[in-house]
Structure formats: structure tokens, C-alpha cells
Length: 251
Image 1: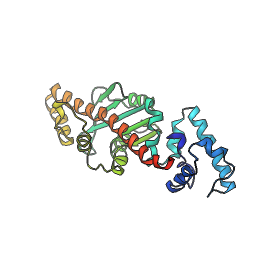
Image 2: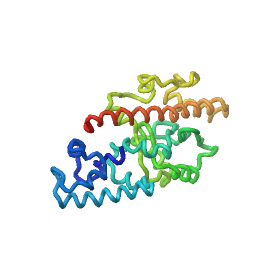
Image 3: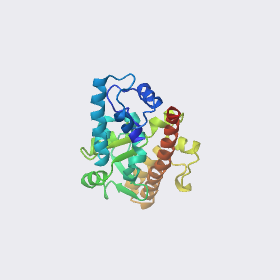
Image 4: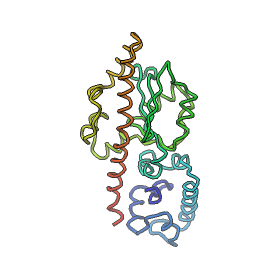
């Protein structure tokens, strides 16, 4: 979808973008090759051609910051497939809703990395780890996970793409929390944590701190890992469904 998208151009609305597709202007190259485009003045087209050339250069340079700056947040899902080998799925646990961060889980599609407060949760390590990725994927991360991380560990989150799956899933008709949506889509969790929720996660941390018993932190880490691992099939689902909804304009 990245080279089919014009939504990053100034004053190009969804309706205008759809009009371009319906004129058989499906790619950036199609746009540049056209001498005149219905609904766009020649002066503005020159400006758009320049912006598209900047975008093409950003693709060559693998410059995710360019797209993070120019693509609307609500359209970052379009970039998932292009950057999918350079994404991380992230989720945090806290001691209360906006309390201290107790666990940060990161999944790159193959391996999980877990940081636990008092063990290996280090701001420099976190910053270095996140800097390796072009896109961060969360569920409700724009309202919770990322603001909390930025509050406790300033400057640790790089200026890269962020796909908060909660919002495109809502557009697709899926509401409620992550666990509810997982069940609707047939995504299962390990039996040990299948009934654990956010309140339970806080309790597990409290019990670990009170007793030092590793079974509590191990269960909390497993719960967090299920969160981040299950974000990948959700991201795949979102991209496929959202793209399918746009395909009608390519016919």
C-alpha cells in the first residue's frame, strides 16, 4: 500500500485519493507520469510531484521517520506490510493504571524480549532496543503504553511509525479490549494465563514484591508475552482487511 498511497500529500483527503485511484492513478509513478490530473491544478501537481519524489527517496533510504512525519497516524496501517520485517510488538504492565512500569515486553515476530523492574528494566537498554525498529505496534498504545513509557523513561521511544491496532480494529467493527477481540477472531492464549486480566497483572506484581516468589513474576511475564505475541496475527488481520476495503477503488 505504501506506493499506492497519496493521503500523505497536503490537502489530499480520502475522497480525493479515491478519485485518483478511480482515474487509474494507482501508484506514485502513475501520478508523476500524468501531465494533468482532474481536480488538481498544474501548480499543485508540481508541488505533489516533488513530495512524491521525496517519498520515493525515503523508501530507498528505508527512512521510516519520513513516513511517521507525513502519514496521518490513522493510516500507519498501510505501511505495516512494507516494514513488517522491522517492526516490534510492544506491551507494558504497571503497578496500577498509570503506576510504575513493572514489565515491558517486546516481540519482533520471532523472539520475545522481556524487561522486568528491578532486574533488567534499564532506560538505556530500552532506548537501544527500540531504536532497532522502524515501526512499533501496540493495542491502545497511543493512550497508554507509549505515554507511560515516555513519562518514566523520557527519550527512550524513537520517532518512528506507530500502529495502534485498537483504532483500525474499531473501524472494522471490533470494539472492547484486546482479550475480547482475540476471542472474536479465534486467537487463543495459553491455558495458564487464559483468564488473567489487567487487574490480575497488578496483583501478580504485588504478590511477587511481597513474597519474592518467582512463580508470580513468571506468570506475569507469560501473560505479557501472550499480549505481544498475539498482536502479530491481529496486525496481519488488520492490514489484510483494511487493504481489502480499499481494493474496490482499484477496479
